[in-house]
Image 1 (cartoon, rainbow, N blue to C red):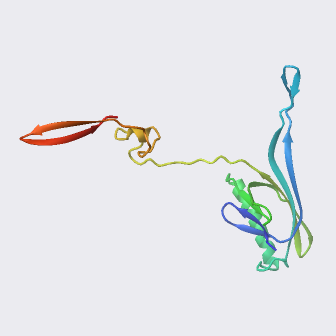
Image 2 (cartoon, rainbow, N blue to C red):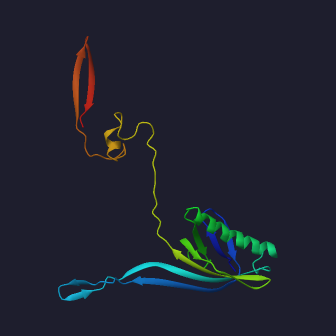
Image 3 (cartoon, helix red, strand yellow):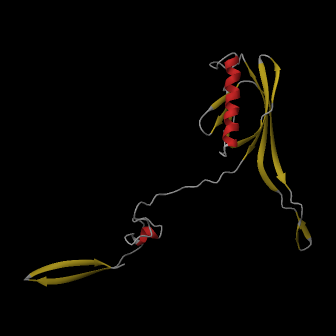
Length: 191
């Protein structure tokens, strides 16, 4: 049996050894005002990112082999959720990945709530609420000391073309020149 994992984007992983229940809730959003076209009234229904609810029991005697046991196990679980909370309170976007081994991992999940209920001295039950978020990816490219806007930049690089791009046929002109009884062949490229 593949263990169910909850992984932080910083690499810390928590094995969910006692998943009691899973609920996925796709959300459809219908606008408050309708859009009218000619005689038809159209509702613009859009699909929002889904929410997921997990009910998990962490025990001092986990069923997955290789996990720590006893009070140490429950302390590891608390430390994992405290780390997520501390990251969010510091302004860091703490994203999680849910991997149950059956389907592709669900990425970019934000933990919205994790109420804890201690029912028996040997286990704790968590009701996790996760919502998938859209994250804008930003890439920064270092152009060095002589960027594309410097005087020494090549025109093809400054216009976002690589130097090897095919620019079609380039016309050339051959000139024969004589110097001291020697004939030199010079070819110039016109662009």
